[in-house]
Figure 1 (cartoon, each protein chain N blue to C red):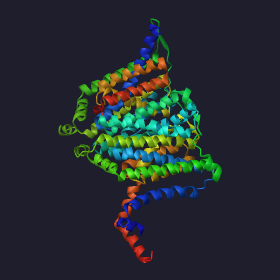
Figure 2 (tube, rainbow over the protein chains, first blue to last red; figure 1 turned 30 degrees about the vertical axis):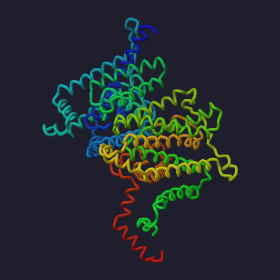
Figure 3 (tube, chains in turn yellow, red; figure 1 turned 120 degrees about the horizontal axis):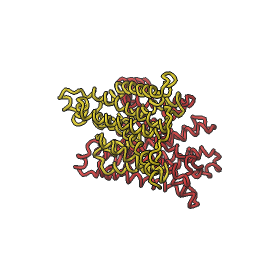
Figure 4 (cartoon, chains in turn yellow, red; figure 1 turned 90 degrees about the vertical axis):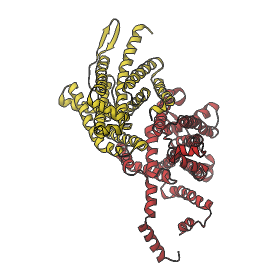
Length: 285
Length: 346
């Protein structure tokens, strides 16, 4: 394997890692904050793409279509938060966790069924990717776009949690719900904001994903699983860890994909997750 | 009336226990008579019902009684099916000989997972994610190791036939599979009944209520969780090859999370978690709903998803406990007693 191939694979892996990190952040935010493991996260990503493709003939520009996709998912997630999650948040502790798993799993399946009926094909936001040659290394423009947008988004998310009042309030709810309540923070409102935010992040991840490969109904659950694995490996309540884990796993999968094939790169990905779960289960609980 | 006598304790415990099993045997025996089984479609549905009922009982033991949310029922069943088929093929034996190895292979997976989970004090959510990851990895292996598994196209499997039944009594091969599955399910129910009435059931209850307190009174929490996990895994592993026999084929998609685990979960919750009849009723109802929605095509998936949401938010107790509590309400009891007064001779 020559050096330019290694660089190309590394950049591809890095881009994939950024997408993993976005999905992981989507899981981490909601799980860390409300103990809800959102199994329908990947579905939001796919719906953003589908909505964008449907809107494309009307808005007539891919970027606008992408924005429509993100907007649709944002609105949808708000509805889900106000209906399903309200029921989930009524319960406490372990019961909330199982209830969260099952209701979001139900939502995933229900939405998958609807997509099968109305939008059964594969979809992608149209983008003409071209090769950029730099010193003998050829990089696809879509890869650079993914890295740029995902990178900005992750930095913004990080700054939001660290620097803004809302972000600080969010972290307070992360750590101590009762304490936050006593400080005059409304945990339910914070949760709503975070849930919608996580759905929007997933939507953007889905649209970026579709720049390089098409998505369909089946992709949804797979994307959710990626998000969960990244979130676990990074430490479920840790955004920095999630980002690092996303990039790490993205590189591993891309290299394994190149060296030993796609199926077994997935096996490696899941094995890493199993290893982390066994090594430090208390972090996730 | 017999119901009241059993409740007053006149009948010995063994008979009371047997009553439930007798109901199961009765239902399983009567089903092929009620439904027209000349068509292979109906028989296939019945066989599916038996397969999923067995899965649901296994999940009831692991998840219901010991909080180990196994989200790899499909994968473990697949391991069982592939183990049986591939070993029979390689060794040139009849699958009947390799069939028990399905239980062994699955049991080993259950043993490792349950032991590690109990040892590391994993919560429900960690076990759920852990088993889901294992499910995904195993599914990828089924497809990826195409040289021995046949990849996505799979491989035909018809090894668990009972030619004696087919030839001697003259029933169709699928009918023979039905009886084979019915016998297996009966054994599973017997095992479940025995387990819950033994020290195991008692220990499960104690552990579920308070793990630390049960440890303090000398219950070996790890041991009991492992026993439950292994029992569930062995049942699931043995159902795998039987499931393949009903389909006469083994392919990865039939053991996927969406194809097995989701359904089994809905069945268990709908029927009633931690109940004896729950898995049976849940499986029957979901297979029936699935059949009704056959013409609806992909709407079926949407309906199942919506059903799961509604069930979990409003109906978590399940059908069997609801019916039982309804039965025990005063008004129903009054109606029943007034009816029985009118027929004093019965």
